[in-house]
Image (tube, rainbow, N blue to C red; front, side, top):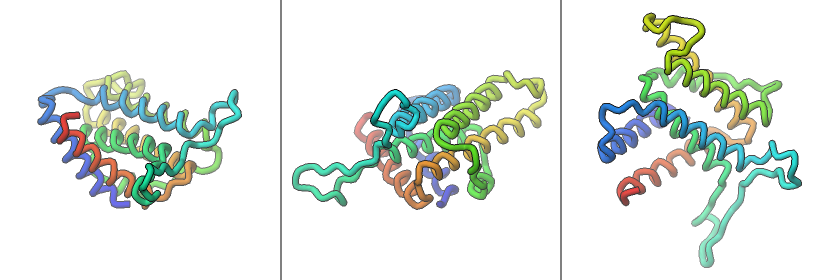
Length: 198
């Protein structure tokens, strides 16, 4: 998976949105973090594995055909789409905080043993919350005036989000190739939406 290219593509989309929506100079991180949490909840909802009260706990991965079209023409995997929507916001957050080393997150090993299902989603939510607290200056580790160490803690929390996100993708059965292709497809859709006044 060419994560460096994906960071660049996301930066291009973000610049376009900022310019076209007149958002220059605004702090977009709180909204990006909330958007990531919302998309992660939507991904969990498509996964359905936490719904112990329901007989329908199978993930929403399906092929939809419109009349006269082949499945190759119209393929939809709602679980993968929600997962990739999360990736868009994770990349945007990385670009916003100035995270510069795609290799750090590309080379991460997955957490495999206990981190399954509900735990994988819960741990990722917790990591996002930790980054949010750090960005708001509520760190229990450092005083807010120590910018160098604060920066290192922010990067560490961001790397942890990526690690847990990769672990979740592995658990959900997505290959790096599937994720990259779905990201490219959705990035194109997002550009088209901007063009159409979304």
